[in-house]
Length: 226
Image 1: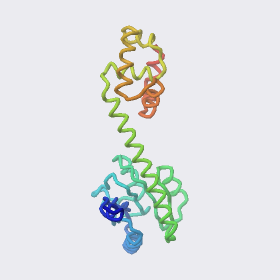
Image 2: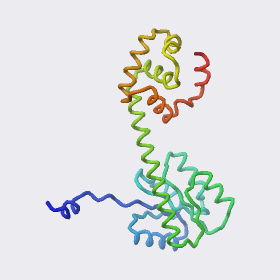
Image 3: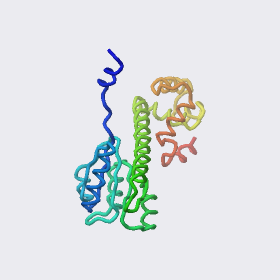
Image 4: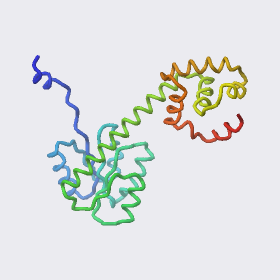
């Protein structure tokens, strides 16, 4: 089979989806046409509620969002998406050069705030940056999900031992705190390392840190008790 034929038969990766939310029909349609010409898939919405009714899936995508819209404004939609756990990157596109609004949007997690009319290249550059950041977020989420799956293999007692080992507690202190022997703690440590597919306590600490276990409320009090 020739390399050309193999390339032709390889599965094609779908292009990213750009969700355009704007109550200005002329801007919405013109932007959609521009983005399709640049080989993006496009979904158009005339209101924030229209997008919420068709929540974007977890795929390469970003949202171009107007600031001022009837019913639900762009910033309000941004907050609703965060509450729903939707992590798609948001780019605000507004007809008003409102600096305070831009600052609030960025602080709330927006990728960029662009003022209409937006030069084509500036819009495309902002979209590419947002898509790249979105890919970083998805990769990080996948890694975290993988770590959670490993830790979920642990028994309740192994989880207790894991949390204390990750904080650097000696076997003797852990054994005393849990009312068992050092030999038993070493046995648990062996099983924990195997189940988490790592080779050292330093690796366990990295897993715990990435899962936010080292900052669990009450952890300081628990450590103090040791």
